[in-house]
Amino acid sequence: MSTPPLILGLESSCDDTAAAVLRGPGDAPELLSSVVSSQTDLHAAFGGVVPEIAARAHTEKLDLMVEEALDAAGVSLTDIDAIAVTSGPGLIGGVLAGVMAAKGLAMGLGKPLIGVNHLAGHALTPRLTDGVTFPYLMLLVSGGHCQFLRVDGPEAFSRLGGTIDDAPGEAFDKVARILGLPQPGGPSVETAAKAGDPARFALPRPLMDRPGCDLSFSGLKTAVIRTRDQMTEAQGGLTEQDRADLCASFQAAVADVLAGKSERALSACDGLTAFAVAGGVAANQTLRARLTAVAEVAGVPFLAPPLRLCTDNAAMIAYAGLLAFEGGRVDDMTLSARPRWPLDRVAAPLIGSGKKGAKA
Ligand code: KG4
Ligand code: ZN
Image 1 (spheres, rainbow, N blue to C red):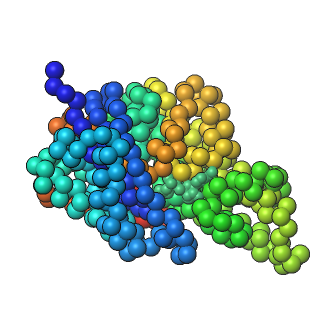
Image 2: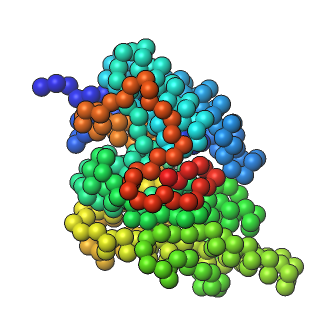
Image 3: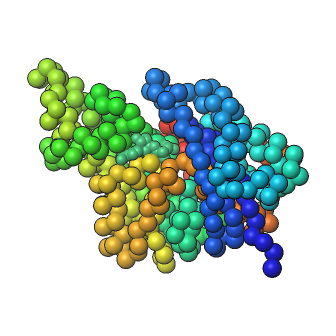
C-alpha cells in the first residue's frame, strides 16, 4: 500500500498569509499544521485592505509561514509530495506572491504544483473537518464573499445565488464605521446588539420580495446611514441605547435575509447531506441560531467548521489540493494567478466586488 500524500498548502489571496501541512488520503485527512499571519494591523488605518501593502507583506511572510508550518507538522520540505496554492480569485498581487512562492518550491523540490480555487477551499472545508459526504449546501459569508453553492464533488459546484453588491461582512464593517465602533465591525456590532432592541428600527430586507437566492446588502447599509442621520438631526446625536438598537436591528435584518434565502436554497436542492457555512460572518451567534433552525426544518444537519478553518487559512487549500492530486490533476509552471475565477462556470457572473476583491 502506498503512503498517503503529504501536501503543503499556501494561501495569500487577501489579507492573511497562511501555510499548512496535510496528510491524505482525501477521505481521512490528517491536518498536521495550519499557521496564519494576519495583516489586519497593517490595513487598519486605511479602512480596508490596500492591495499593494497586502502583496508586499505576503511576499515578506510566505517563506516564514512555510517554515512555521513545516516545523509545527514535524516534517521537512523534502517529505512534501505536492505544493497546493491559491491561484485565484483574490487580490492579484497577493495571489501572484503565493503562486510565485509555490512555483519556486515546486521547481526546487521537483514536486508537483497544484493551483487551487480559494472558494473551492472554503466549499470543501466541511469534508475536511466533518467528513461530510456529497452533495451538501454551502453558504459562504465573509468580508469578501457571499454565495450559496451546491457541492456535488471536489470540482463540481453549482451556484444558486450570491450577493449582487456588498458581502455581509463588508456591511457589518461599514455599519460599525458609520456608528463609530471599532474594526473588524462584525464582532463590535454583535456585542453592541446584545443590549439592543432588534424591532426598534424597521430596516429593509433586500431582495426578499424577489424569487431566487441572490442577495444584496448595500441598501441595508444605506438605510442605517439614513436612520443615523435622521436621529442626529432630530436629537443632535445617538445615545448608547440608540446605537445598540440600530446594531440589533441591522443584525436582525442580515439574519432574516440570510435565513430566508437559505430556506429557498435548501428547498431548491434534493438529497442534501448537510447545510454548512464558512467565512468570518459565520461566527455571528444570532445568524448561527437562525441557520440552525432553518436546517432543522429542512431536515439536514447544520455544520459550522471551527472558526480558524472558517476564515481564510491554508488547510483548506492543502485539502482541495489533495483531492485534485488524488484525482490526477496537477498544474505546471504555466499556472497563472487569476483575480476572478468563478467556481460555477455556467452561472451568470456576480457583479459585486467588495473591499476584499473579486467575489467571482
Ligand atoms: O472570512 P473572514 O475572516 O475574511 C474574509 O472576509 O475573507 O471574514 C471577515 C469578516 C469581517 O468583515 C468581519 O467583520 C466579519 O467577517 N465577522 C463577523 C463576525 N466576526 C467576524 N460578522 C458578524 N458577526 C461576527 N461575530
Ligand atoms: Zn475566503
